[in-house]
Picture (cartoon, rainbow, N blue to C red):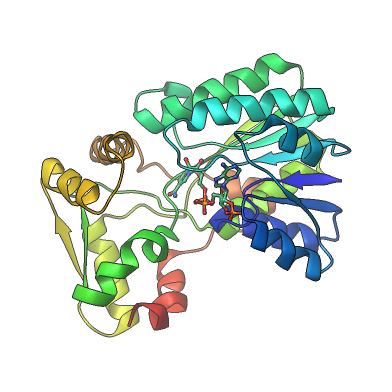
Amino acid sequence: MICITGAGGTLGSEVLAQMRAAGAPVRAAFHSADKVDAARTQGIDAALIDFDDPHSLREAFAGCPSLFLLGHNAIDQTELELAAVDAARSAGVRHIVKQSVIGAQKEDYSLARVHRPVEQAIEASGMMWTFLRPNSFMQNVLTFMSPTIRAESAFYSASGEARISHVDVRDIAAVAVQALLRPEHAGHAYTLTGPDAFSYDELAETLSSAVGHTITHVDLPPNELRYGMVDMGMPDEIADRLLDLERYFRSGEASPVTDDIERVTGRAPRRFADYAREIAPMLR
Ligand SMILES: NC(=O)c1ccc[n+]([C@@H]2O[C@H](COP(=O)([O-])OP(=O)(O)OC[C@H]3O[C@@H](n4cnc5c(N)ncnc54)[C@H](OP(=O)(O)O)[C@@H]3O)[C@@H](O)[C@H]2O)c1
């Protein structure tokens, strides 16, 4: 049995779907009770967890030698994931595949510093590990940018002309499936990127062609972007984390392209232009 946390989210739901398609025995761990109910009606072994409640984690992880660990974007994400690592060890988990972030090993931006202590705790735990270090998700277009794209035909960043090798979560999930099913991936950290790097202006051009009208990238000074995020109700700490991510993008550190997805899955990573065509109806 393989437990998948974050199973109701953007990446975890794709990991769950691909694991089921592979015929692997899975337990899907959700934080929302309605998602547990919905999964059970589909015959999925489902558990209700709260990273704040170690008992719920130990119950969910019991009988699962392998665990896909995905923490949500919370102020105390590091502490919550560390508690999950402890719970995994006491529940008898032997291999953790952890969702991390590009460049976690260098710890030179805030999200890397959120994830790296968890990686280190897993390394020190005696459990086997595989770290997935993806770049920015292509799916962020729908998750975060689509409201203003639909309302104003525009989206906002403070990334300037930075090039970013955005990656499709379906490819991250495909790597997660291989890592969960094949022991040879233990002890490896994979940097997961799309097949090319492009700026937000170029992303806007690709979206415009797919949607059929002009979508504009508005490059804001960091302080203005922060003001907008906090004004929409985002906690200061999370806004600061995202602004530091924009700084990281501007430094060019998120522009490299790797072949880790192709090496692990045997197929090339998806291109943004294809993804843009798929989601175009949802942006009109
Ligand atoms: N977005 C990016 O571009 C990007 C790039 C690299 C790395 N990452 C990393 O990827 C992760 C986010 O992945 P995602 O976008 O797939 O996440 P997501 O869609 O936000 O899903 C997070 C899941 O966490 C669950 N959750 C919320 N609160 C919880 C709690 N207290 N206890 C247990 N589970 C809880 C939710 O479960 P329910 O659905 O059941 O409510 C939700 O499905 C983060 O660690 C982030 O740093 C993101």
